[in-house]
Amino acid sequence: MDFLEPMVALDETHYQDGYKDGYDDGLVSGKEEGRQVGLKMGFQVGEELGFYQGCLDVWMSIICLDQDAFSARVRKHMEQLAALLSNYPLSDPENNQLQDMMKDIRLKFRVIMGSLRAKLGYEGRPTSSEQDFEDI
Image (cartoon, rainbow, N blue to C red; front, side, top):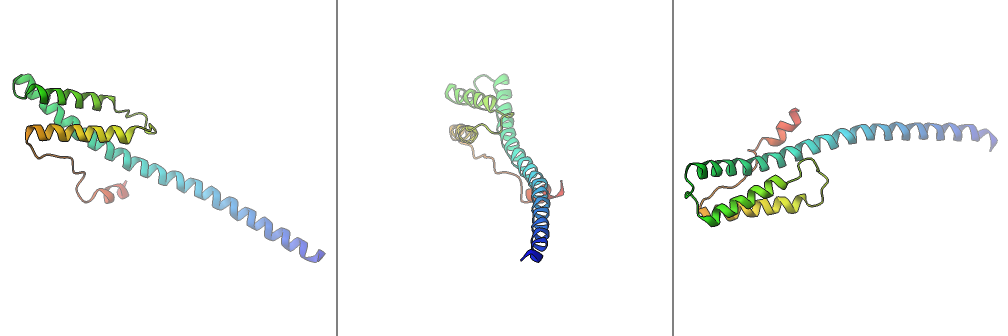
C-alpha cells in the first residue's frame, strides 16, 4: 500500500486546490450577484417611495394655493403619510421593520385615494425593468 500513498496525497492536494479555487470564485460571483440584487431591490423601493413622495408634493402644493382644497380629515391623512415617508430609514436597509413601514405607507396612500375618490396607485415599472438591470 505504500506505493499508493503518493497518489492519494496528490489526489487530496488537487481536491483541496480545486475546493479553494471554487470557494474563492463563489465568493466573488456571490458578492457580485448580491450587489446586483441589492441594487435592483433598492431601486424598486426608491422608485415606489418617490412615487408616494411625488403625489404628496403635488397635494401639498395644492394646499399652499388653496387651504380648503381638501377636507381636514384628508389633510390629516396626508400629514401622516408625510411622517411615514420621512421616517422611512433609507440608509438602514437591514432594518427589520422596513416591510411593515412600507405596508403602512401603502395603506395610508390607499386611504387618501379612497377619501379623494381617486383611482391612482403605484404599479411599478413598465415591463422591461428586468432587462434594464441586465444592461447595467
